[in-house]
Image (cartoon, rainbow, N blue to C red):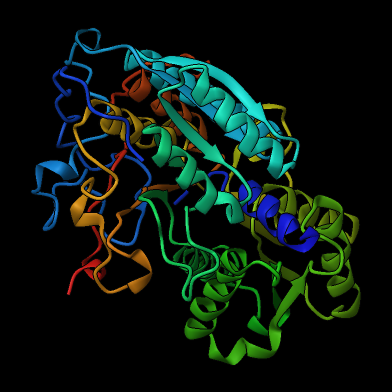
Length: 435
């Protein structure tokens, strides 16, 4: 059980960038969908499996594909005011940031938001307090629990007739063959994330280091092989990079944190070990799993004499990278695939709202996002979100756009010329989802 809990906590921490009953609907009218079109990004191209065009693609025509997004022109005060509670199994900066994003969207959708509650990794306390919140009249929930608790969570919520969504990890039946979904989710394709990192490292090598002999360049992919979702990021990077550079197979090193733990210190240890053993390389490409590992890897490179001219680290996430740049720190960690928390949180809160108002059910929401080619979907939607390459040059604009899009004031950067359409908050349904 300790092993399982460790995996769960890592998954929750890792999906930072970068998720998956209903209450009896009232008589109130459900809100209209969010705007259904947006201009392509005017700056950095979006990172997404397909072109990101705000859900106006081949499979985005069903009205139920468009529910669950905030409509700034709709008067949400016309509807009943609901209460939404966020429950987690752990605490930390990522949970705090997520909670702030939920609070923002709840306010905009005329819902009361209860402060984040954490069980302190106590599953029994989580389930007990879920029932307590239901007894206190909470209408809807957002969960970040131990994934092994989702079946019991679903039973409790169905019996009480309350609405819910999982956030950082999908709600699955972990005991059934294939671990099928039991609820829709909003999230990311982690193998594809890894592929994008591998391709970016190939691009970096061939543009930034075009004059460096290929045999002097090594690649480290920091892994945590115990957790499949994270491991897919590693295998995706390895497959994509070596497909472009099959002659570098012997220059590709996997630094697994399974023995040290997927932490800042653990990454520092395993990356330092590779650097100490492979002393012939003058330049290093490094792709990792999430922010803490990126910081540990950058620290290892620095301690071994590498700098931003001779090494580059990339990851999924980027909140800590933003903080580094804001504080004038410019080390080997130079890239991240990033989705602002406010963009991630919108559809999660919106889905709970759609369930509470009767606009959709877990079985009917986002029908074009049901992956017909994956039995694991079990008929439930798996909505993917667009992500963007965050760099030193564009990070302030990207974050300020998330403020403009959400009508928030989290960042204090220059918003001149930025509109809700500067980047895309939604993406087309991938062709691969449909037969």
